[in-house]
Length: 250
Picture 1 (cartoon, helix red, strand yellow):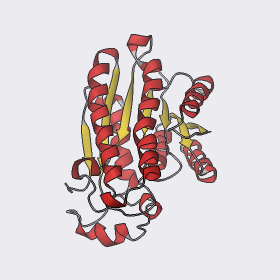
Picture 2: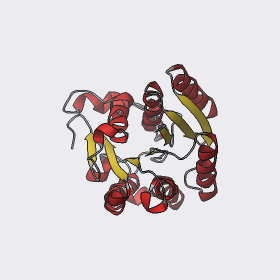
Picture 3: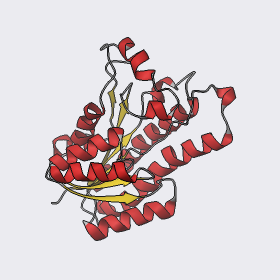
Picture 4: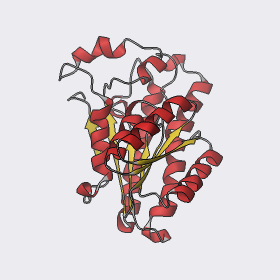
């Protein structure tokens, strides 16, 4: 069966690394992006050069119409997806405490990180689940170690959104276990990606990486390796599991 995987937020960081690794395994990879078209096209080129097939689809995962269009285009171009990586997410543009939170930022974080994951998962399940006539599949949700720590003194609203992703992973896994769809999640810790600069903390990895138990921050590729495993048949008896990719941090 052809391996068709949608990776949201795949123009950079963990999403891009995951798309590249899937391409190297010969998968058909849908590279979702919102604004970074040039970066998404570069990832697409890497996927094709690695031996896979690819398609870039612009879309805001927090908008239902965009999600519907993404799944329709995927099915038309490649067929019914066999995998979904809910990676798209934002942390806000600055470090903040609870009393600094503004409504617009909170709303955007929940819309993309939580509603986006729900919308994409719903559309994937409608196509994958044996209950709906599908052939099964796998979903991997990208959470954060912040779901456990609450991200205090940095962005508690982001931590709360990732806590919701963890809960969703557990609930979906139980609902779908009988119908051929596995649902798991990864919780990255301090990973060297662009999200820190986007959140106004460009020096965060350099400053805090050496304080991690392993003495360094992780790489996007190290998280991607776990995601690809959870999508694969090698993890066929794994569902409802959250894997911490945090270098031992808690």
